[in-house]
Length: 220
Image (cartoon, rainbow, N blue to C red; front, top):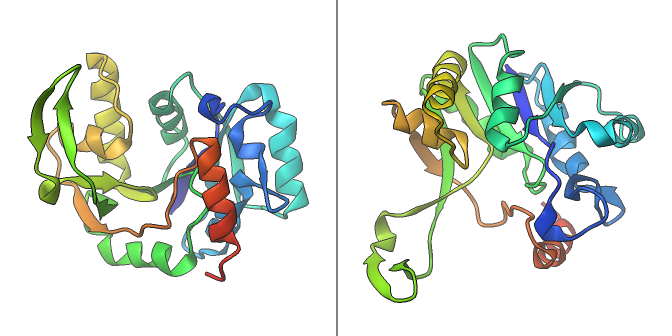
């Protein structure tokens, strides 16, 4: 199975001089943590890493420094969705696994669990939302039932052809989604929820760096 690994962003909200995927936590670039885990998964053949063309040398140096051998650099797009679409054109396997560099806290047993869901069209880990969520602008206009809400995580597993068709339809419709399961669902396909885990942090802000440093010091 092929894997798409999203690592082409610039991470503006992190406010660093280099894209966040190269920022080091405990001496190691963020993008390397999950790659080292994916590298060990036997059923993952190629890892198509979407990259920012302005920093190609940093990617190549990081892969060399940490002996990452399964990667195939794939030029990223202007948006996350475009990056996935471009990488999908290189995927030849029936199913495709998608992860992102901004989530370094993944582990092998969690990834191996996806093997139990290969008959599904889309498989997405989620965790409950533990806080109240309201709608509105300057004033509250409604309160959402948090018992029916899901915090969507990555990695995710998809039927490759279904995902390609969803991306093509979205491209034609001018529809932009924040992640791929929304596209698959929008165009009439089932999305299977599985149990995620709270430590699967997405690094977005400087505060997330502090949390990730502490979590990465815990023996997982």
